[in-house]
Amino acid sequence: MALNRLSKTIRSSTCVHMILLAIFLFTAIIISSGLGYISINFTDVFKIIVSRITGNRDLLEGMNKIFLVVVLDVRLPRILTAAIVGAGLSISGTVFQGILLNPLADPYTLGVSAGAAFGASIAILFNINLFAFAGLSSCSVPVFAFAGAVATLFFVVFLASSNSSATRPGLSSNNLILSGIIVAAILSAGISFLKYLADEQVSIIIFWLMGSFASSGWPDVQLTLLFVCAGFLVSIFFARDLNLISLGDRTASSLGVDTKKVTLALLVTASLIAAACVSVSGIIGFVGLLVPHMIRAVTGPDNRRLIPVSMMAGAILLLCADTITRAVLPSEIPIGVLTAMIGGPFFCYIFKKRQMSGTGI
Amino acid sequence: MGFKIKEISFSYGDNKVIDNVSLHLEPGRFYGIIGPNGCGKSTFLDLLSGHSKPAEGSVFFMGQDLAKYSKKSLSRLIALVPQNFYINFSFTAKEIVLMGRYPHIPRFSAPSPQDMEIVNDIMTKTGISQFKSRFITELSGGERQRVVFARALAQDTRVLILDEATSNFDINYSIRMLNLAAQGVENNGKTVIAVLQEINLAAIFCDYLIFIKNGRIAAYGKTDEILSESTIKSVFNVNAKVYQEIYSNSKQVVFRR
Image (cartoon, rainbow over all chains, first blue to last red; front, side):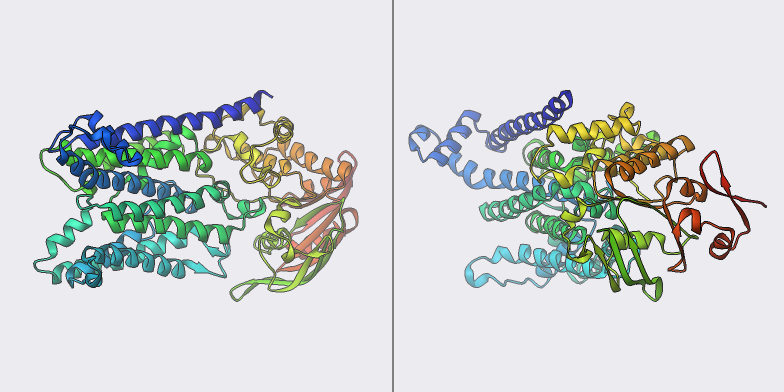
């Protein structure tokens, strides 16, 4: 009975984590909406959001009309996109680490980022405006990035799958990682070549590659929200199976998991989340690697707890990082650079600590 | 109602690992599989556990083709202790044992008190209670193998497949764990199919021995009848002396340099 109580405590502690993180995230959204070139009172931000949701316009009386535009049309879409992308990259990273049996995998291990970058570079270089007729000229780059990411994923899975592998019929994690590295290397060379060809647009390509939320709008929010929510549901549905898969193929199989089916489903899910995130924000590194790591130290490796808590933590982390580059630093630096500059050294620290203690994380 | 194996073959590429094997395995018996390295023992177990499908022939389990079972229903009938396992993630020992109950717990449900009772009981029997909260990544090879063994026992299946499951145990735990498996056979009519490297240990515990060489069954029969100098010679190409031993109450094999 004591053990039953213990397991209840563990689960309720996850609930507590989730509630605390949700409150923290909401507060961060309100505070960061007030920060920026035009400083807005937090109570005003709160009023604007509440009036928007409830449709009660009385709350807005006596408020500067420009605040309304700044919060609803400029800051909120950017803030929400950053939070959703952070959540998505963290879910994706957690799932990849489980499937690839490797705590050092991340959403870009299979070359999704390189594929997206290649697609985006082509769209920028050839100045492709597929959607000009619909008045959506800004959509071409994300669409090409997404297509590039998905095409890369399918090629990598095709390359990695075999029927005669002795240890793992289907998709072995080593095959997947190796295929991902090979394809990413080819695509990187391709991107370099495109940069070389692009005279004037090279700065646009480079800026895109570094990642930014500066131009995020409501369509970006909707797109990422759709993918991240759907991806979250699929991931949480297979979370228990993912626990078993992370212990190896024969083990998972003997405990009733159809490993090939579940691996493929999760692989596609995690990659689609990453592809959607990359296509709106560019390549933002280290979030998908670090967040699951940090959270695993708190919740343990059980994906049923790890995935939801990582999602919230990732949202908060990327939102805060974006707010720092947008509102705190004197001039905006690309978010991808910031996360890599903070995340890289932190990762070195974790990695070294792991080496010293000789234990897994 | 056990396994009926009909002319199965399996190959990796051009390398035929299992070559036209037919065999009947009855429930309520402790089977030992013995053979040289790379003779196809693990592949044979994979075919029995439904992890791999035979290229030719079929395996019938409890009267039905193994390929027709769903993974889920199979996991309630057959448990496996794998030979190699690497665990990169710091699950606690208890979490790992509890995973053995997953096939019996619906996807989104918490484990019932009965599940926890089974888990605690098995952990006491396998002597891992004292490190139930330690991380699996911090345990020694033998301790880790005990945890994985306990997980398979917690699965509480009719068939238990052991793939060199005692390779990291000291002699105390080898005997203790195999006794736990044997108790299931004697008291509850379960079936154990174990690949063992230690011939003498196999002779003590197994009712029947299956010798595999080059993907074929080289010899099969009751332990007392089949274990002989000529069998050892033909399977391993090693000279040995086989004699009836009183203390262990079994046939034993001795070698010399």
